[in-house]
Length: 415
Image (cartoon, rainbow, N blue to C red; front, side, top):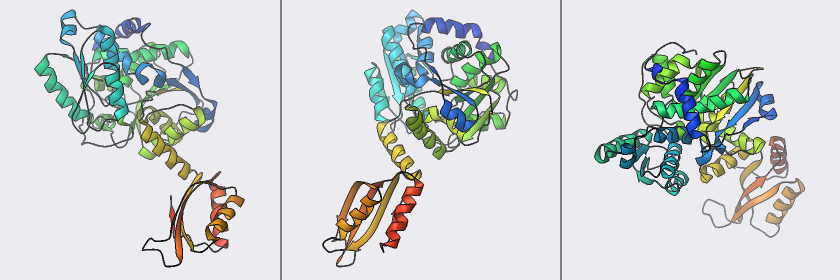
């Protein structure tokens, strides 16, 4: 689905010169993040695949680039009034860090369901955090009210030219590091990241494709481009909370429409699989928004065979509880974790016989629960719940077949 040229609005106010100036401001403040080639994912996707590791950036995401550039552009009077922002987490940390470094008071409004790790990190960087609303858009509405009451400068998370100029510095680094670059794949929420990148890429090397990825749960930019007008969506919940935006930025939308070549959607399960693969294959911690690019390539939403491709890993600020759930689900799905509930005779030797059988098949016991008094279990029998570590799907099926041959009934199998 190609959208380029469908709509143009306000795109002449962000320039390559502004991005280069942002690069000068950020020198010595941000980390020039690695561009990492992956032979594993190149083989799996058919592309020559590189990752721009903004998850290793200060504050754990690319957002520090735009936030710091915006705050550096403020007048002395504006600095005295402080700044205010709304964010699901990453922009919050970027603004907090930048403001503290500049000696400016910062207030950040975050959704009430924002991960506690992101809230604590934002407070740790020196900002005052206000929790309000169910999602980013409701937090944004509250932040605008507070801005009017206090007179603080509002630092938008994506729809601001100084912010987009800061994000565009990623593209300056990419073009310098990888002269043969043929495509850039970036996550899209409100559009600030891809807008800044696309302007730089299309100005300096128009042949490079710029492709955005959204989750199908929150496809505001995708639908806006399809309808050639900005759309506002109802609230949604997604593992990619960093790009869970209900309405694109107007300034960003104009740039996206002019410069971005294509935009595709991925499913939630595809994102979680990509997070799991990053952990297992590359030993990289990636949040949901940062994993959408790889998800698109792995699941055929996007095909760039034999092309030299950079995927922007936008951040790594993922809650530890979410990681643990993703890992457990991933192990079950790949056949490396087996949850069983079965009934055995309530007599000496029954449980030890079962465990001996499993040990003989090299199944590693992780946990076990033995219950002989549950009302649903017949008298003189006991229910056993087990969690087993298995090698793969073939090993798992071998165990189930052996249990069946030995006469064990498997009325319920948890997956």
